[in-house]
Image (tube, rainbow, N blue to C red; front, side):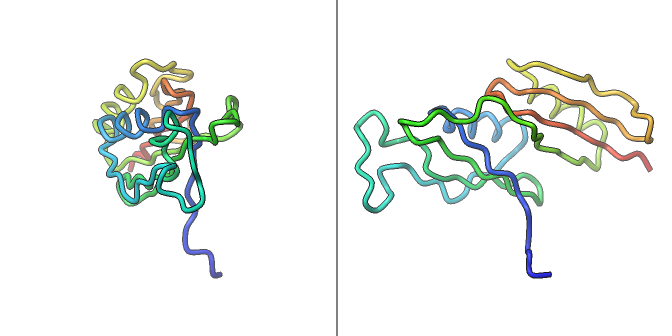
Length: 138
């Protein structure tokens, strides 16, 4: 198979920069390849839109989450049937990151012992992004 990887790409409504900072703090994400609208060839954004995020790669552990702002004249997604799933190798880290991600958001399913032998929880963060966390017990 020629597919090298799969990763989510999240669009925000002009607050991607705040979301990036939040994920850096809450998840230890590392920002790479941050580009703003005013860096795109041929784009001439208005002054208030020059610093919108055109693209950012966030490295979280060995995973990649890509982030951008929607175009100024377009509404970004408001509902989703997708979740970003974080798999943890440490239960204490899962609990700490879940608490950090849920700050200002809404816990839809607290971390608990799942029937399949894992710790599992769900939340929607303050930016409206749905997350699942999983720690597979050995």
